[in-house]
Image (cartoon, rainbow, N blue to C red; front, side):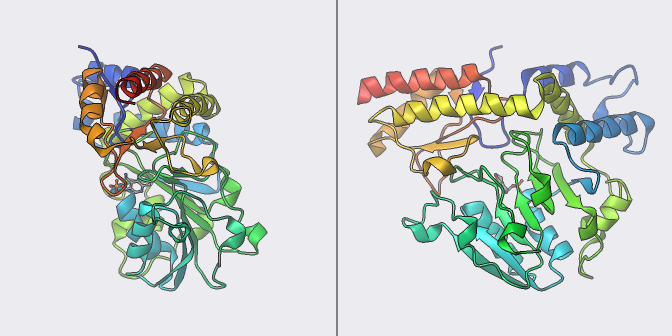
Length: 366
Ligand code: PMP
């Protein structure tokens, strides 16, 4: 068996030692006589797995004590509804539009109240979301219950390298962020955040698990029709066990957290991510063949969309990549072209193999 380099945007490649350990423990978790999938979420074995997973996550991301960590389900798209049901109080919410995910978030929020677009990079032309509107230009509402951003736009390859400081902009509303596709790839400035959410299936583990980090003072304002299982206060009061949580995804996330700690933690992973992203962007910028359209200061370290000079070359590029065991490089249909997602678990060697293949392909077709 040889594993390929898998550049999928998500569900995405996982660290090989994690998969190997999960395989070894599949039938019998550490002498318990049960696999993790078969355990009660209220039993002592799963208790142990859960407690360790949460602790590791809190350590890795330096999550302050005033934040609850909730292990939920439904993914980031469900959070697009769950957040307004919990935080909007039926009033105004502010939205910064930087790509297709933040547009989707705002559309869902419209079902629960007035959802203002306070800044958008679509106005910069071509509607292809390649810049980041400077926070000083955001037209924040005086009465918004929160300001929503997507801190890494997976489809467009646009990443906020610094979180906005809303207080410095004279805004008291909490910042809410969808950090699904770069959580764990860099430290988080928690002093600027009220709530952060992330689907697990990029840097954390399998799909089915959503992480929510919520400042305690934001709990307890759910709208009356909010389902109990989605009421953050209920989930928090029950230690994420109000309903059955996605136990196996939590277990794999726990193994990923152990792997991240063994890699030197988030700061060390961030350095490696910078190295990988620099290698790939340099290969694109240094060629007359490949292009990336995102403004340099807004480029994502995780998701790198790029284009070829001729549409007829995409099919041979992808076929050749597959022969080289470089998988899932097709771009999202709304942007087109190619996209390499290079999350924590993508080794430097994978990006080196991609860049080598790109050079060969450009020489042959350039
Ligand atoms: N937000 C972002 C930033 C994403 O990358 C994704 C998934 N690609 C989503 C939301 C949607 O996630 P899900 O399908 O798990 O709800």
